[in-house]
Image (cartoon, rainbow, N blue to C red; front, top):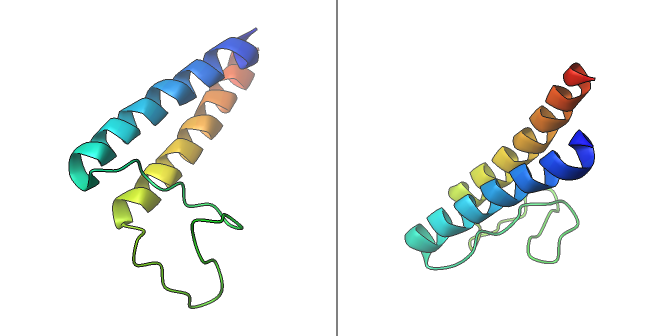
Length: 77
């Protein structure tokens, strides 16, 4: 029940929070920095001038939040 209900809600809350912060800072939604994404160039030494450090921070933060909620759920079980 935890995995199916709590993890998506926690992810959604933080995603909306990061989106609002990014819209206040950059006037746009943050770019999810994922490998093989169409929005970024992930080749070695590639430059992505449209991707800001905050985009990378928000992407890494969402990854940490997902992993942390999964570990919390495992510990509860």
